[in-house]
Amino acid sequence: MERDFRYLREKYGDAGARDIFEKICTELIQAKFDCDAHNIRVSQGDEGIDILVGDFNKPIENYQCKYFLDGIESAQITQIKHSFQRAVEAPDYKMRKWILCLPITLSAKEFKWWSEWSGQQEKLFEIDISLFDGGFLISQLKKYEIYEKAFDDDIRLKLDAILSYLENEKVRVCNEIIVLIDEADKDIYEDMLFVKKLESAKIELVEGCKRDFFNAEFAEYTIKSKDSSQLSELLNKLKLKVFNLWETQFRRYQDETNGNDLLTRTYERIESFDTTTLDCPPLPEVSLFAKKGMLHQWAEECSIGWLRNYKQKLDEYLGHAGK
Image (cartoon, rainbow, N blue to C red; front, top):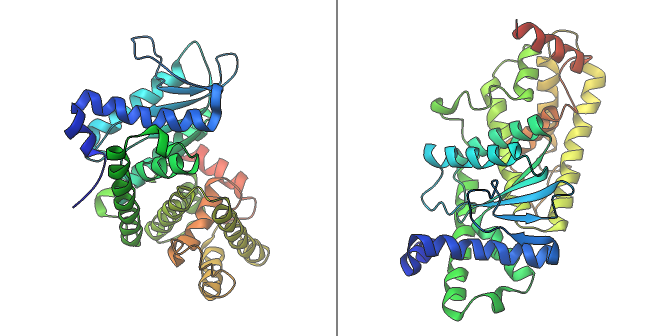
């Protein structure tokens, strides 16, 4: 039988379930940050905050709890965007980080939207944006040794079942994402910098690059949700190896107007090293597609490109496209 946070609604009703879910989030954040974490009473003037870390004298961490059980559709997307917009426009405080807490694991399609939207907002407002899903929240409660004291036996048993279900669900989704982007989603990354760099360099088969970027983003999300410094360090080292492969090829194949040769040569090097230099058994989430996608993660950060003077070429391309 599937287990998720739905049982809270069955036991406590909609309003009570939302309160319990926010309690779970609050217990965790207060355990992590002690007296610096504060739960905000719901009112007209709560300014888009459920839980904050810090005070209004300097930029805060803002945690937003959304008890969405049935996935992220247009109505839920609207709520998420509205909450974030209220927070960034609040006159009484500034944010350094905005964290969305959900009781579910995102599907592949949902993660496509989240990846694009959160990346755009981070660049636009210069704010770190993170996602805490249900499995991550429960794992963190156990890590900070508040799981046993925060919940009664009935809730603990339910949460154990939920954690097992969500972890299996994340593995299932991770296994499903090595696919082409659906036709309906072909424009989902259209405005991102890594796509503009590909276009400015006359790169062909951009849809495959979008697929690779998505696989890299989802793999990183899956690994970081395990909250293991060791696994995160391995991921960072793997990304650096991919960067080094690009750097070597960039010295050899950089061109003024066409980046197809550079991208192809770098992809070929990643393929050839997939089971040797780039092999990392502790990170089974990182497929060959994801390793290629790491190139586009670096490109999104403007750390790499496909043309000589790629930053200048991108500025010229964006300026021309805007006319």
